[in-house]
Image (cartoon, rainbow, N blue to C red; front, side, top):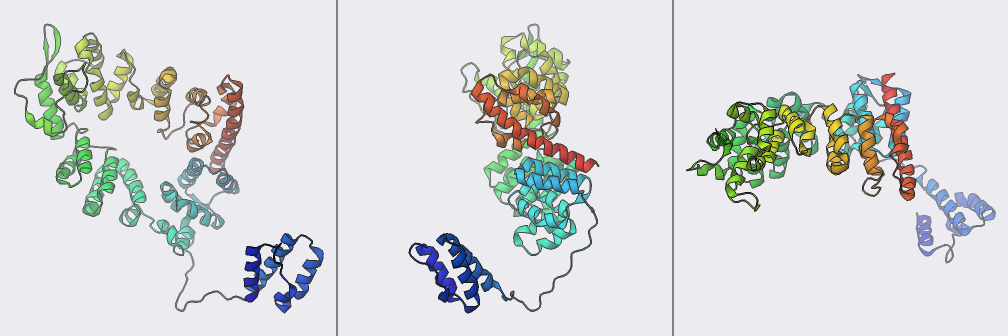
Length: 484
């Protein structure tokens, strides 16, 4: 259409240099264009309205593209019930809030209740799933049969075409397969390992490393054969991660080797606990990642080797070797200046082997607070020590807290907020939005108490707490909408 070219030229030149004449328009539009020129004085507005008029005229009668032989079947009937009007309105408000964490919280509750969204929300949810790969499985579950059907018409939505874990594992993206592996590793560790073995030869090195890190969940004796076979992998990173995992399995040959060395290294004499490497130490241990030389002047090479060995044996070994309890062993080692050096290595072993008994023993008997032990404690103890030591270890405690999947207590949240309110640039709105799933609704009444003393900071916190309140209102509304 020549008229459309004239509109483009006018847009490029500007209405001060060129205007559209009625004669340049199709005859059918002459009356309407004349009316616009007579009633609209502003040249820019007159041009925009004329362009809109021509655009609609141009679109009239346009036929869609047609391809022979294409058939479209109807979507299968839904098997799940639609969620409530309140839940859908809440979902709409969550979209407006742009909080991915809150959206994930909503989707998790929707899936847990066995419900789905109405068809109008399906395209928007599928679009969200494109960049938010961790939400894709939840999106699939909450879009129902209509989502599966609609995904066939957009390649970017094809993540929704696989509906079972096995299908996702075979055909999904790396992120989807990681999600499947993480879930399966928690509920059936051996099956997760078997699935990995089926596709292992086809994976690239980076993907292998990511899958091995997931294997750390529920690491067990059944993984030893597979992990030992990886010593022949081309990628050093894969070999290193496999060895790191083997050092977390008490029954693995490398851990047994370390225990045999320590059996001879640690003796009990008249002077108490004695730690000294035996003569003729098997050089094979230095091929398993043990370094010979210390880079700390306060720690001898011999002590450094023993520390590395200690980090990779289960703490229960010391109970058998010393015929004592964790409490007594910790208190005894603290009395000797040399033995005291080895306590941090034992703490690393507690963390590596996730030994909750020893974690509690260290918290109750150690003269030093070891922050890495906190995640191994029962939730109430985690929160007690987090609140107690937050002034000294705020960054570490917050880092541990945000890794939790459950909701914090009001007391812990208040302690965290008192710290974060002082650092408005480090802990901005996106921080609270990202971890809103951890924040309890009950903190709303406590937000004012978290305000910093400085006037400038109080004003900023006031705006931030208003934002937190809005997010928590949506969280509360989400809970209510799926409890009705």
